[in-house]
Length: 294
Image 1 (cartoon, rainbow, N blue to C red):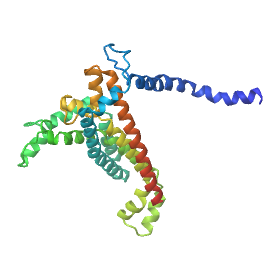
Image 2: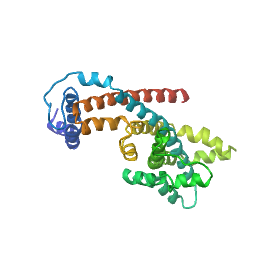
Image 3: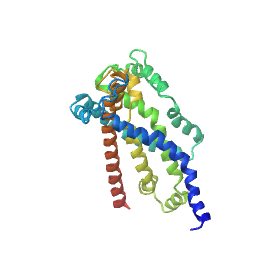
Image 4: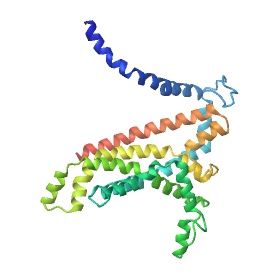
């Protein structure tokens, strides 16, 4: 092989080398160090950094009821938040994809909350949820209904978090669906209209099947995002209510409140394994369903 040919083969490597170095430095190396840390009794204060405990952290977390309660809360939040986030995102995209006057204004309004910082979002909704003078409870009182303790009643607290999350993050799914709709050729709709099909038939037999890949993408990304919930739960509740505490919050508390970094690392890798397993299972189920319908 000539020197010129070898040079061309290596030229691609030098283009990706900066990314590979950053990838190794900020992802692979911390990942390996975290695995090592999960087998130690390391503390954020530095005490016990060299104390190797083996599988003791993993044995402890399997017997820790707070871990399983936090995991359950995370799964409940995921099950409650994913369907409306997907359905509303699709509905808003279908609404603004039509030729409406000032469609750009609707698109801006639907996507704008997504770019707000979580602290601003939580502040808005804490005022809305307030008893007495909050807009939601004031409206319920005006309608002759009783007030709801949106942030004080444990029975509705998770619903409050879900409502806040849907308002805040639905814009991302909306944007993905809007991009998917714009990829569908208009000629297909025109042909369907010439054949005398109704708008509902075109939606059911044309739009939704052609959005199959977008459905898969949105669903996978949304489930992964819901499983990692932390910010809005912590800020809405002050981080003190175990009834809605997520697994990410418990990892944070174990590492930065109780200073047990080794134990927090073990919990985080258990959670990581669960996310990988769910993602693989989800991809297989959706792929099998797509193959049956194709």
